[in-house]
Amino acid sequence: MKRCTLHDDCLSGPSNKVGLMFALTGTPYAYHDVDMAGGENKSPGFLAQIPYVTDDGDGRHYNQSPRS
Image (cartoon, rainbow, N blue to C red; front, side, top):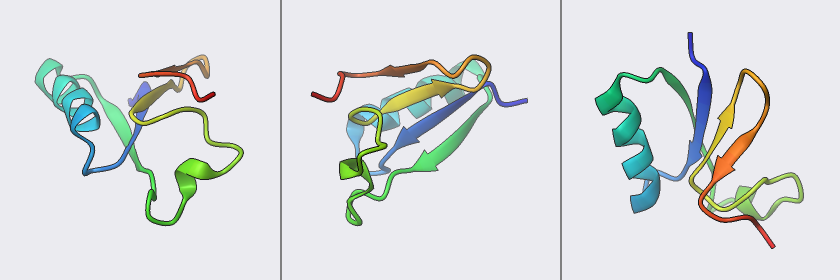
């Protein structure tokens, strides 16, 4: 069962490091590719800068830095 979702762009170095950490620790996770070229990261509902992780259990999110 996947407990969290990683939201990232495959070209992002920091995002790749988070995915690698999940893989090396055996943490199950879902992946959401953020469409940076299409402007998904600029939409009003977007939570933060990538990478960010949402906890599917309680809805909290963890990110590199908050969006201002």
